[in-house]
Image (tube, rainbow, N blue to C red; front, side, top):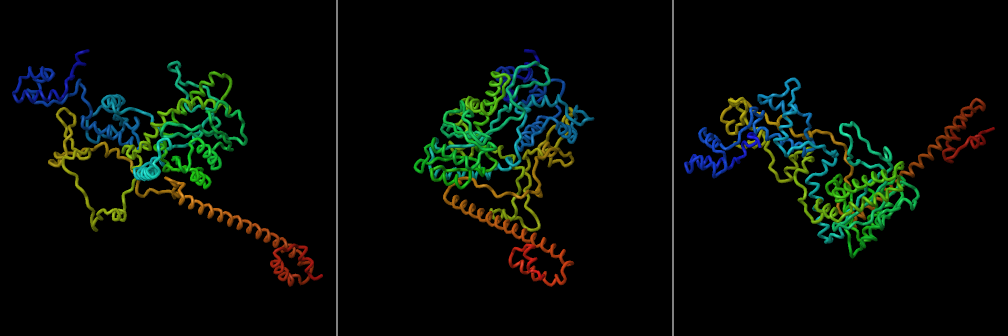
Length: 578
């Protein structure tokens, strides 16, 4: 190890204890250096110059920002990332703006007004808790829906159902559909020539054909045989070659789940789980309309299946299959496709090979450990309504609105007096970044002052924090909102009141459709009658030049035609006087 690498290997805590004992004249500086394992010359120099135990900066170059200033950057990066507005490397202008606003000497590029790549690399070295990663896209609807209030209501409803029926873990199931394609989503990494610009991997097609697979598992780690939905009119036995034992196959034109197929699948589910009114089963599922038809709810209730819906747009956090099963399943399925293409050169994967390839991936992913951990991570079993930390709810805070005066009065909060508002002044010494002043030091680098010192001297210039230059995103109060749809039913959806309510809705919908159909048919009839009368009147006008006094009879004939509701030209002709 070089001499430079051996510098400052001592601990600040030990140096502080050594300095205190020497200054109190308990021991000498040579003995203190041996007792506390600190360099003797460094200890002697710090005692002589009356220095503290803080380590200094090594080398000739000094950092641009002090340690107190730079500590703001990691926290601000974490806050922005928690709100899904992460800071990229292209935002290096923010660092330059921070230095220029606070009059800090820096070696940054004045022409481009950005910090250099060298400073970014040094910053990442000094803060190992910060790394550069590629984020995943998260829809705005999911970011808004996953909030504390929504999740608290969900866990409250789930707890009530579980306490009412006292489900054992083997009777708590989750069901969901996932799409399968004949084309792998992400090929595996391969060894290739270094420096090559583009590396390819063979696939069956550019955009493959899709089908749906239905999977379900319980909190004990047991999996029910899956079901396949093929985009076909008729079924072929060859499609299920080498499929998982006990699997079911259905046909639908688009390869999607529909209420009719869901009822058939529900019978398959009841057969394997032995659900009954004496042995009730909890089935957790998303709130899609295909799961909420009257036939589905009635069949589930008659067979002891309690249907419980997740809140809308929250399944990426709450549904065990999404959290711990489908991701490894898709990975293994893509690997099996790639292996099959190597073993069968010149051929492509079709729907006839999907069941066999899925079976191999399913056996790898459908393990008891994955199922048990997925239910635990979502807080379903063991039940834990505090499973999600606060940072997961940060994206929803972007669209938070403050309570109105009416809401505050209803919540029992104090209403502000007329003519003014109540303002809480900041306390001195709070240490917030926004309330810090800067005084230039003799070495040309800034030293951060406390809040108390700022109030003691009003002539010192203001310090701009990183939070002031890059504020956290917040939706404006006047932001326009689209008209929201009727909220979907969530929680326990197949209770007796829910089924009765759905029956009324179905009857009302049927009545409205019948009335609409009748009005449509009535409109067609009157349109036909109007067309007949129009043609008849045109023919009568052509005859006015042929027969005198024809206009005397037109009114009589027109009224007679209205009474008869049908009037052709031949009928009117015989009514005319010859």
